[in-house]
Image 1 (cartoon, rainbow, N blue to C red):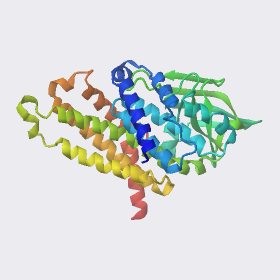
Image 2: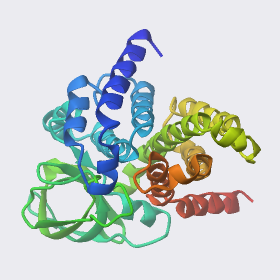
Image 3: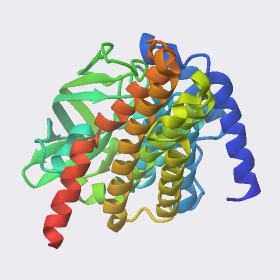
Image 4: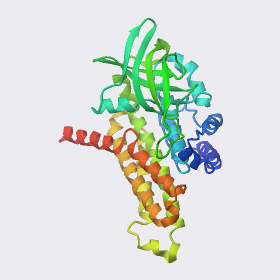
Length: 359
């Protein structure tokens, strides 16, 4: 990494630490949406990837997600959503979106989500596509319901896949202010209630041709699914490092009794360092042939996050069991990383089917 990139990341980390430490709890529990933080990152240039090489752009996304996860996985997830939406536009051949929407996304003036939870499950053979598209003059009309779209709301955008027929699915960006689109926000999660997660209902929502990322989603998905999965690893990396810090601070509690625990901070740190090295090495190539490697790292990081956050609670003892403690928040965050698409069971299915093909 160049000195300029190091300085940039230090700038972003200082901003994130300053802004997130005081609000992480209310983002997690009270549903506070850290919109000013997201827009502030845009103003600092954190989302700016146009002009960077594919490798540098992916590494920048991954590191930004990792840095923020040390303080708040909700915000880290929002950054993942937004930068993933940027990747949709960047990887498309849509010059209209690249000219009109992309600069606003990179500056943080417009925020965006992904909307690919259902499609990713479809491509894994887990469920059918929930949205249907009908070709009309100058575009498509979309109908159906898709749950759990995050980082959306008035003035936001998000990407979706809709099925035209058995052989064709389209990939498009959607303006949240579109006529016929209604959204119901989820506020009853165990945590991460500030992620602006909605169920989105489409009632003949018109999508003009200018918004279409690809008329063949089946061909476009292989271009972005490796980076889609790999950048999620940053959430787990940052979370595990924060848990290790907590364990180290609690090491000498109660006359050093934590030294008798089966898991020590150095073991966790060795594992997260190894995963970190693998992830950044893989970020040098986001080709689809790297997809299974990304799946493996994503699974290992999710499992390590569960182990690290649980262990941190045990190290803290009763102090870690308070509902508003950092330890308890991180445990919820680790559970989120384990269930958000692609969930641990989804990842295991992909690896099993891959191994079955090879055997």
